[in-house]
Length: 136
Image (tube, rainbow, N blue to C red; front, side, top):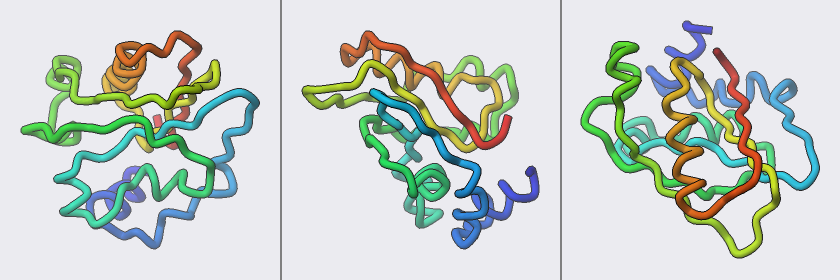
């Protein structure tokens, strides 16, 4: 999986985006599938959003935005990741289902998902938030 992530994200090999589509099925009722977005700078350099690539075959709710940060998570130590500040903002529609599933490619410390959940709460979401990641 480390080699897959390096090829897909590190080298920008978008052709790999569908490699796990048949197993990346998140099914449930009364839920919104909210992907963790890339920073604009990462998107510009890579040319695609890796999480949208992996989960793009699902009905996604694009309710989060991520501000650019000085140092990417991948270049930080575990301790540095845990100290990372909030970089997400949530923009919720008028009607939101009671369950949100955050979707991400790689779970390392959980800090990214914690911040995404906090942004949803700050925007007023009071329901259940869970997450699904391709790799942990």
